[in-house]
Image (cartoon, rainbow, N blue to C red):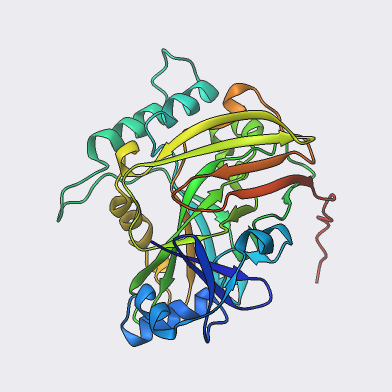
Length: 322
């Protein structure tokens, strides 16, 4: 399997097996993806054609704060951060507990059941569309190892361990999947719990990705672990499952219902789409505090994704009249 990582100062590293090396003549994964599309090559083939330089210690670079999100558009306004919820077996129970009780057939349970019944259509058929949300643009992408800033007005800042797909739109509007990463789809669950219609507000938060990008197909069964550390000790931890074997929707169906909109097939744009989770510390009545460290790990993705929780200063929301 091939993994790519992005250095903050430019340069791409490739890991196959236990060894990571610099990719020759490569400043960014985004530029590599563009080059691969133009040449009609797979990203893995292009990387191998370029060849490799010196061996690097990815873990050391990560510890020094030198790794960025694996893919960034040079213009953050041309990045879409989006996601789908209620896609994992067990996710509806978590959401239902937030908005109802076990006897209620809430809208969450209804849309989850729709996914179970029609979320994995046969080839040539169209499945049911999932829940969908918007998180922001590239300004909300936080590098692995950096702090996740929760807004001053937020009622909660909680982790969501997910898998994210990265996509480049070609000049002709064709969608090209670059690869997959771990993601912390950071959300405000207390705000969401007040009223389901606050879901849109709760999702307008930053998110973190990486540090390694898996190039190629995703395994159908993925195991991972999510935990929160406080003062160097584990405050909370739980295993999670992902991959299509553990989901109510196929990735093909989720991708179809996102990219069916012309707005999301504009040449050159970068899309980062998060595919949902069923595991939240909030569901276990855990409230993270500033300085707590979220860690999401999976052997499928190599290095873990780690971010500390921080609180932003209050914004100036005054509107001037021109």
